[in-house]
Length: 568
Ligand code: ATP
Ligand code: MG
Picture 1 (cartoon, rainbow, N blue to C red):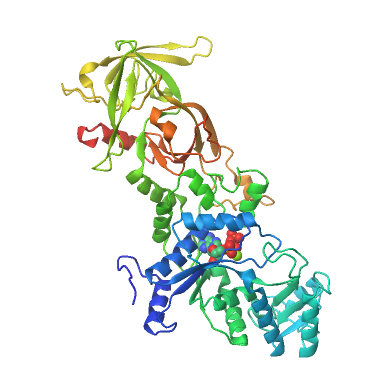
Picture 2 (cartoon, helix red, strand yellow; picture 1 turned 120 degrees about the vertical axis):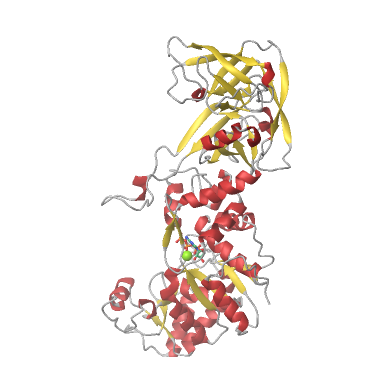
């Protein structure tokens, strides 16, 4: 019946699906959908829902639709429709020819509304929004019936048609379901089904001036598409009775709504309203700012679809809300990049290292392994010459105890090249800054290993000064300073918790020559500095810009491993 991989855990939604398959509830079909509202870019929370819905369809030989929930003409834009499709595809999922829009169903939805009226299950209400709120009651007080509740079917049909024909201004009337003003569930207290809105819709233009509400449009859209399992987040649990009521009241095909806990991530915000605010106020560099949890931002930052899929699998599917540590997402990313990323030499804060006993115009090529994690790794040749760049931080005039990098008299390994011993350095007289370091190399240590068994503790990365390419490198830290950005002092808001140092731009970084051909969409491990990817927005033919994808968690442990002769 299905091709379930027994290795993947059976969470409660899979358990429901398997039972339904067993009982032939939907004749063996599994048909899910991902229903974004095109009012913003997708974020990592949506990715969880995408992986879940498309993933279940794949696992049970079913189908998954992409449906734009575009019932609100005010906030929706074509830009979002396009970005959402791009993001779902990039994550690795395919809706084939099943791309739908709730707005495609406006005529059908209108017909369903007419049926409800004809059955005496819906009425036109003329209460003002304020009055309606007052009549609604509260969690502890029952509501009151609207004085318009008992209008005749004929009058309701007439008014509804005139609403549709544009005879009334916005907000003057609504169509409501006639359910129960005493229900303990506020959603069941005669909810609004249609409202008047003289607004242009991104797809239907000015064809409509009444628009269906989310709860009404959603269940019928699922029904029209013959969805079997309509998976949504927990806040819709209290809407499920309404979902069921609408479908039963009209008497159409009835999918099963199932709720799961939304993903919350530490050190970030996920609500589209807040993300939109950051973008509109230019507190970030657009929806695809690499510090944002948007899929477009994660992509620009160098995240891989594989890492996101594995993350979605690992966090699982639960029935109660929790906050996932962003470190888990970063872990999944490192795990993936470690397997695939090319290791390159990149000096982010360069200072010159001159090898005094190396020929003035000498040049040789040393062999560098592309990825030591891959037993079949290819190698490449790096130019080595008399003048190199190393990290400023890798030299100390006055080294502290246990400092294994370069210092006067100290010997270190230049990765893939030679042992060098520091013989001196020069400083800028005015600033006191070290401007050049001098050393000698031991020609007997080619490849970075000594034949006499002499050991060095420090291994430095470097680039040949004459061959290096220049780049701007953007170091990225968390966008917020605290795990929960909504934790604010009274009167404050989440923006108070923005990290003012989340972006640090380094100019004049020096990369190994092959990086002129770096590809957008590929992350590289800059040895000892972390993973980086070419920025898709600011890189040009004349300028290389890199974003930090994620730091290496424990760069020193890696260096120490690299020093073992078998740790190449
Ligand atoms: P927001 O609350 O951020 O505005 P939303 O839920 O209104 O987001 P939709 O476009 O309606 O955004 O979401 C599309 C689908 O993605 C829905 O099925 C929704 O349940 C799911 N989804 C949204 N946010 C999350 C999240 N954080 N975790 C899991 N699923 C989510
Ligand atoms: Mg929503």
